[in-house]
Amino acid sequence: MEKDSATLRSQPRDALFKRLAAFSLLMAGAALVVVSVGARGSTRSVGALWNAAGVAVAQSYEPHTGQPAVVKQIANDLYFFYDYDGSNSVFLVTDAGVLVIDTREHPRAAQDLLARIRKVTDKPIKWVINSHFHGDHTYGNAIFQAAGATFVAQQETARLMKLVQPKEMARRQDYFKEHNYDPDEVKLILADVTFSDQMSVYLGGREVRLMYFGPGQQPGDTFVLFPHDRALFTPGAFTKHSMPNMAFTTSVDNWVKLLDKVAARNDYDVILPAHGDVAHREDIKELQSMLAEEYATVKDAVAKGMTLPQAQQTLTFLQYKDWRNYTRLKSEIKNLYELIQTGKRSYFE
Ligand SMILES: [Zn+2]
Image (cartoon, rainbow, N blue to C red; front, side, top):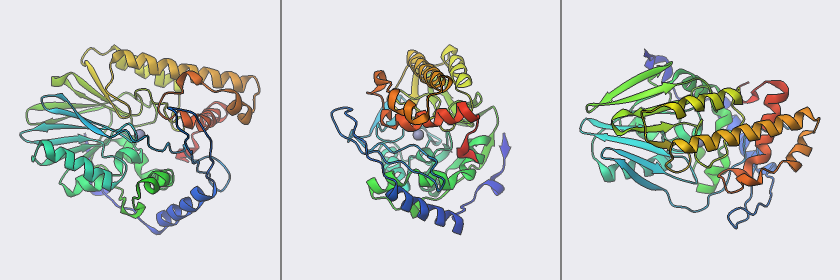
């Protein structure tokens, strides 16, 4: 465990950041692409953000379905905040205080999460773990910082949060607009403590084990085990019935292999994913086969010389039409084309 509170805690809302945020707002309006998809009986608009070179910089935002967020009690001391339309959180309640995993996508959403925690306990908020760098898991950090939390993240997560902050802000503007949230309220709050492979936090007599198995959906993906409850929180690398954003993975093969390791562990019975509902071991296989199929199909299209627009037209993966984020399929095909054709992840450049 490595302490870098002095260097890492920062709030770089500098001029460049503000300019980029303003630019992205402009571009989001200019490049809104509307498609109709008959999923769950509704028509959806899907926005896509493009940078100056016309390259897609992010996935489109899937507007909310109106399913209300709920808190599910998983064990005596463990709670799962489940928001189908947004991102999930987990909180552990002990006599010594509270540990929270992920803080939602905006300080207002974090306020709601904190209010829900306060319905369960008035104990102090001691720790926050950010499971990966995405803003939908970190942009509520400021509320928990004000509540006194110490922030922990894998070192790649801490690095990437800083590196891609303007791009993260850019791709979340549709969410902010839809919820009427002010983007200027978002503050980048980085880790106080980072780790490389594994670390344990002890709170109220419980061990909370943070584990990094290498890049899955992205570098930094942190799994969190609550051994006493036999519960495992999973980051972007495993979500239930949710098609992952493919812009960040450096190897789909490694991602699928990493999930084999997770599925083979015998120290948990229940999975609390970063997106989607409570899951179990067998759900991992389901995501693995989706990933393997999506990757093989797109690789085959590239090998056959299919252009990106042709692939986007032809490859429909209709068997996943009921999964969360199916409407982002065209940008995921684009993201896979980039990985397969160039080996690059332009999001990190
Ligand atoms: Zn997310």
